[in-house]
Image (cartoon, rainbow, N blue to C red):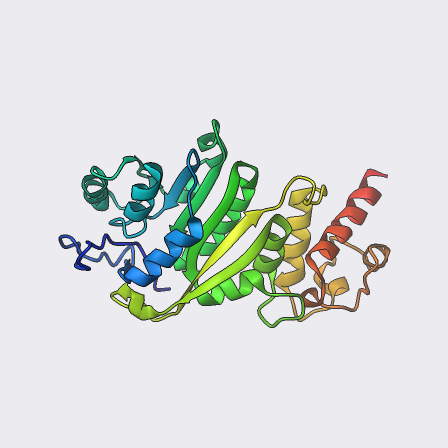
Length: 280
Protein backbone atom coordinates (compact mmCIF):
# COMPACT_ATOMS: atom_id res chain seq x y z
CA UNK A 1 0.00 0.00 0.00
CA UNK A 2 1.34 3.41 -0.86
CA UNK A 3 1.84 5.56 2.20
CA UNK A 4 0.80 9.20 2.22
CA UNK A 5 2.42 11.09 5.04
CA UNK A 6 1.48 14.78 4.93
CA UNK A 7 4.54 15.89 6.86
CA UNK A 8 4.56 19.66 7.06
CA UNK A 9 6.97 22.20 5.64
CA UNK A 10 7.95 25.62 6.84
CA UNK A 11 6.52 28.45 4.77
CA UNK A 12 8.34 31.78 4.95
CA UNK A 13 6.39 35.06 5.29
CA UNK A 14 6.89 35.53 1.57
CA UNK A 15 5.18 32.21 0.94
CA UNK A 16 8.35 30.60 -0.40
CA UNK A 17 9.59 27.37 1.25
CA UNK A 18 12.91 27.70 3.07
CA UNK A 19 15.56 25.47 1.53
CA UNK A 20 14.87 22.18 -0.13
CA UNK A 21 14.04 18.78 1.28
CA UNK A 22 14.11 15.61 -0.80
CA UNK A 23 10.77 13.83 -0.50
CA UNK A 24 11.46 10.34 0.80
CA UNK A 25 9.51 7.50 -0.77
CA UNK A 26 9.69 5.41 2.39
CA UNK A 27 7.89 8.18 4.28
CA UNK A 28 5.61 9.17 1.38
CA UNK A 29 6.11 12.78 2.36
CA UNK A 30 3.64 15.44 1.21
CA UNK A 31 4.44 18.83 2.69
CA UNK A 32 1.67 21.21 3.69
CA UNK A 33 2.23 24.63 2.13
CA UNK A 34 -1.14 26.43 1.91
CA UNK A 35 -0.96 29.50 4.23
CA UNK A 36 -4.76 29.68 4.51
CA UNK A 37 -5.05 26.08 5.70
CA UNK A 38 -2.14 26.54 8.10
CA UNK A 39 -3.81 29.62 9.56
CA UNK A 40 -7.11 27.78 10.05
CA UNK A 41 -5.38 24.92 11.86
CA UNK A 42 -3.54 27.28 14.20
CA UNK A 43 -6.78 29.16 14.88
CA UNK A 44 -8.56 25.89 15.64
CA UNK A 45 -5.87 24.88 18.14
CA UNK A 46 -5.79 28.35 19.75
CA UNK A 47 -3.13 27.53 22.37
CA UNK A 48 -3.43 29.14 25.80
CA UNK A 49 -0.56 30.16 28.10
CA UNK A 50 0.80 27.32 30.20
CA UNK A 51 -0.57 24.50 28.02
CA UNK A 52 1.65 21.62 26.85
CA UNK A 53 1.57 21.32 23.06
CA UNK A 54 2.85 18.16 21.37
CA UNK A 55 2.95 17.85 17.59
CA UNK A 56 3.15 14.54 15.74
CA UNK A 57 5.16 14.75 12.51
CA UNK A 58 6.21 18.42 12.35
CA UNK A 59 8.21 17.96 9.15
CA UNK A 60 9.76 21.35 8.42
CA UNK A 61 7.39 23.26 10.66
CA UNK A 62 4.47 24.66 8.67
CA UNK A 63 2.22 24.35 11.73
CA UNK A 64 4.98 24.15 14.33
CA UNK A 65 6.40 27.62 13.78
CA UNK A 66 3.12 29.58 13.87
CA UNK A 67 2.14 27.69 17.04
CA UNK A 68 5.58 28.29 18.51
CA UNK A 69 5.38 32.02 17.78
CA UNK A 70 2.08 32.17 19.64
CA UNK A 71 2.91 29.82 22.47
CA UNK A 72 6.65 30.06 23.05
CA UNK A 73 7.34 26.35 23.61
CA UNK A 74 6.25 22.93 22.39
CA UNK A 75 7.35 19.34 21.91
CA UNK A 76 7.45 17.59 18.53
CA UNK A 77 7.71 13.91 17.62
CA UNK A 78 9.53 13.35 14.33
CA UNK A 79 10.64 10.04 12.82
CA UNK A 80 12.72 11.45 9.94
CA UNK A 81 16.14 12.28 11.40
CA UNK A 82 17.09 14.39 8.39
CA UNK A 83 14.26 16.83 9.10
CA UNK A 84 15.18 17.42 12.75
CA UNK A 85 18.11 19.86 12.19
CA UNK A 86 15.95 21.89 9.81
CA UNK A 87 13.03 22.23 12.22
CA UNK A 88 15.39 23.01 15.10
CA UNK A 89 17.14 25.73 13.12
CA UNK A 90 13.86 27.24 11.93
CA UNK A 91 12.39 27.18 15.44
CA UNK A 92 15.37 28.77 17.22
CA UNK A 93 14.13 32.34 16.72
CA UNK A 94 10.54 31.58 17.75
CA UNK A 95 10.71 29.72 21.05
CA UNK A 96 11.76 26.55 22.84
CA UNK A 97 11.34 23.35 20.85
CA UNK A 98 11.87 19.89 22.37
CA UNK A 99 12.32 17.18 19.74
CA UNK A 100 11.60 13.47 20.26
CA UNK A 101 13.09 11.39 17.44
CA UNK A 102 10.81 8.34 17.54
CA UNK A 103 7.93 6.43 16.01
CA UNK A 104 4.86 7.95 17.65
CA UNK A 105 3.49 4.48 18.38
CA UNK A 106 6.38 3.97 20.81
CA UNK A 107 5.82 7.23 22.68
CA UNK A 108 4.24 6.96 26.14
CA UNK A 109 1.94 10.00 26.22
CA UNK A 110 0.94 9.29 29.81
CA UNK A 111 4.57 9.52 30.92
CA UNK A 112 5.07 12.60 28.76
CA UNK A 113 2.12 14.23 30.54
CA UNK A 114 3.50 13.52 34.00
CA UNK A 115 3.53 17.22 34.95
CA UNK A 116 0.57 18.45 32.88
CA UNK A 117 -1.91 17.06 30.31
CA UNK A 118 -1.16 17.32 26.62
CA UNK A 119 -2.73 18.99 23.62
CA UNK A 120 -1.87 16.95 20.54
CA UNK A 121 -1.58 18.33 17.02
CA UNK A 122 -0.45 16.73 13.79
CA UNK A 123 -0.72 15.51 10.26
CA UNK A 124 -1.05 11.76 10.71
CA UNK A 125 0.48 9.18 8.34
CA UNK A 126 -2.55 8.07 6.36
CA UNK A 127 -1.89 4.35 6.17
CA UNK A 128 -1.27 3.99 9.93
CA UNK A 129 -3.65 6.67 11.15
CA UNK A 130 -5.94 4.16 12.90
CA UNK A 131 -3.16 2.64 15.05
CA UNK A 132 -2.05 6.16 16.02
CA UNK A 133 -5.61 7.14 16.95
CA UNK A 134 -6.06 4.00 19.06
CA UNK A 135 -2.68 4.68 20.70
CA UNK A 136 -3.82 8.21 21.59
CA UNK A 137 -7.14 6.92 22.95
CA UNK A 138 -5.22 4.50 25.18
CA UNK A 139 -3.63 7.59 26.76
CA UNK A 140 -6.70 9.84 26.64
CA UNK A 141 -6.64 10.48 30.40
CA UNK A 142 -3.42 12.41 29.79
CA UNK A 143 -4.78 14.41 26.85
CA UNK A 144 -6.90 17.60 26.78
CA UNK A 145 -7.67 17.48 23.06
CA UNK A 146 -6.31 16.49 19.67
CA UNK A 147 -6.31 18.37 16.37
CA UNK A 148 -5.36 16.05 13.53
CA UNK A 149 -5.27 16.19 9.76
CA UNK A 150 -6.11 12.86 8.17
CA UNK A 151 -7.47 11.41 4.98
CA UNK A 152 -11.03 12.75 4.65
CA UNK A 153 -12.36 9.21 4.32
CA UNK A 154 -10.92 8.40 7.75
CA UNK A 155 -12.47 11.50 9.34
CA UNK A 156 -15.82 10.54 7.81
CA UNK A 157 -15.55 7.11 9.43
CA UNK A 158 -14.49 8.58 12.77
CA UNK A 159 -17.61 10.74 12.97
CA UNK A 160 -20.07 8.34 11.30
CA UNK A 161 -23.37 7.64 13.11
CA UNK A 162 -24.90 4.15 13.49
CA UNK A 163 -26.50 2.98 10.27
CA UNK A 164 -24.00 4.81 8.07
CA UNK A 165 -22.19 2.82 5.38
CA UNK A 166 -18.85 3.97 6.83
CA UNK A 167 -19.77 3.36 10.49
CA UNK A 168 -17.45 0.73 11.93
CA UNK A 169 -14.91 -0.26 14.55
CA UNK A 170 -13.03 3.04 14.31
CA UNK A 171 -16.27 5.01 14.74
CA UNK A 172 -17.33 3.04 17.82
CA UNK A 173 -14.00 2.97 19.62
CA UNK A 174 -13.30 6.67 19.08
CA UNK A 175 -16.81 7.77 20.01
CA UNK A 176 -16.65 5.73 23.21
CA UNK A 177 -13.56 7.69 24.19
CA UNK A 178 -13.97 11.10 22.58
CA UNK A 179 -16.24 13.73 21.15
CA UNK A 180 -15.43 13.77 17.42
CA UNK A 181 -15.73 17.14 15.67
CA UNK A 182 -14.85 17.32 11.93
CA UNK A 183 -13.66 20.89 11.29
CA UNK A 184 -12.83 21.49 7.62
CA UNK A 185 -11.79 19.96 4.31
CA UNK A 186 -8.23 20.22 2.94
CA UNK A 187 -7.78 19.74 -0.83
CA UNK A 188 -4.79 17.91 -2.37
CA UNK A 189 -3.42 21.21 -3.71
CA UNK A 190 -2.61 22.29 -0.15
CA UNK A 191 0.34 19.87 -0.26
CA UNK A 192 3.52 19.64 -2.29
CA UNK A 193 3.46 17.25 -4.05
CA UNK A 194 -0.34 16.84 -4.00
CA UNK A 195 -1.51 13.46 -2.65
CA UNK A 196 -4.16 11.46 -4.49
CA UNK A 197 -6.65 11.88 -1.64
CA UNK A 198 -8.57 14.67 0.04
CA UNK A 199 -7.77 15.47 3.66
CA UNK A 200 -9.71 16.91 6.57
CA UNK A 201 -8.98 18.38 9.99
CA UNK A 202 -10.75 16.92 13.01
CA UNK A 203 -10.90 17.80 16.70
CA UNK A 204 -11.07 15.03 19.31
CA UNK A 205 -11.97 15.86 22.90
CA UNK A 206 -11.55 12.96 25.35
CA UNK A 207 -14.61 12.26 27.45
CA UNK A 208 -14.41 13.04 31.15
CA UNK A 209 -14.28 10.14 33.62
CA UNK A 210 -17.96 10.82 34.39
CA UNK A 211 -18.85 10.54 30.70
CA UNK A 212 -16.91 7.35 30.02
CA UNK A 213 -18.27 3.85 30.52
CA UNK A 214 -16.76 1.72 33.28
CA UNK A 215 -16.88 -1.63 31.47
CA UNK A 216 -13.69 -3.62 30.86
CA UNK A 217 -12.10 -1.77 27.92
CA UNK A 218 -10.38 -4.90 26.60
CA UNK A 219 -13.65 -6.82 26.60
CA UNK A 220 -15.46 -3.95 24.87
CA UNK A 221 -12.72 -3.79 22.25
CA UNK A 222 -13.00 -7.56 21.70
CA UNK A 223 -16.78 -7.38 21.24
CA UNK A 224 -16.47 -4.49 18.77
CA UNK A 225 -13.66 -6.14 16.83
CA UNK A 226 -15.54 -9.41 16.39
CA UNK A 227 -18.83 -7.68 15.60
CA UNK A 228 -17.32 -5.69 12.74
CA UNK A 229 -14.93 -8.43 11.68
CA UNK A 230 -17.90 -10.13 10.01
CA UNK A 231 -20.20 -7.14 9.64
CA UNK A 232 -22.51 -8.78 7.10
CA UNK A 233 -23.41 -11.44 9.63
CA UNK A 234 -25.97 -11.06 12.39
CA UNK A 235 -24.63 -10.32 15.86
CA UNK A 236 -25.40 -13.84 17.09
CA UNK A 237 -23.21 -15.25 14.31
CA UNK A 238 -20.48 -12.60 14.42
CA UNK A 239 -20.16 -12.87 18.20
CA UNK A 240 -20.33 -16.66 18.32
CA UNK A 241 -17.94 -17.89 20.97
CA UNK A 242 -17.97 -14.52 22.74
CA UNK A 243 -21.62 -13.85 23.48
CA UNK A 244 -24.67 -16.08 23.20
CA UNK A 245 -27.96 -14.98 21.68
CA UNK A 246 -29.43 -14.88 25.20
CA UNK A 247 -26.65 -12.59 26.39
CA UNK A 248 -27.22 -10.25 23.46
CA UNK A 249 -30.93 -10.18 24.30
CA UNK A 250 -30.10 -9.52 27.95
CA UNK A 251 -28.27 -6.40 26.74
CA UNK A 252 -31.54 -5.24 25.17
CA UNK A 253 -30.46 -5.99 21.61
CA UNK A 254 -31.96 -8.25 18.94
CA UNK A 255 -29.37 -10.95 18.07
CA UNK A 256 -30.49 -10.72 14.44
CA UNK A 257 -29.26 -7.14 14.14
CA UNK A 258 -25.93 -6.34 12.51
CA UNK A 259 -23.04 -4.43 14.03
CA UNK A 260 -23.59 -1.23 12.06
CA UNK A 261 -27.06 -0.88 13.58
CA UNK A 262 -25.80 -0.62 17.17
CA UNK A 263 -24.87 2.57 19.01
CA UNK A 264 -21.44 2.64 20.68
CA UNK A 265 -23.00 2.17 24.13
CA UNK A 266 -24.88 -0.94 23.00
CA UNK A 267 -21.54 -2.69 22.48
CA UNK A 268 -20.69 -1.69 26.04
CA UNK A 269 -23.99 -3.19 27.21
CA UNK A 270 -23.11 -6.52 25.61
CA UNK A 271 -19.68 -6.49 27.24
CA UNK A 272 -21.23 -5.75 30.63
CA UNK A 273 -23.63 -8.70 30.34
CA UNK A 274 -20.78 -11.02 29.38
CA UNK A 275 -18.67 -9.77 32.30
CA UNK A 276 -21.53 -10.11 34.79
CA UNK A 277 -22.34 -13.68 33.78
CA UNK A 278 -18.66 -14.65 33.78
CA UNK A 279 -18.20 -13.20 37.27
CA UNK A 280 -21.39 -14.87 38.48
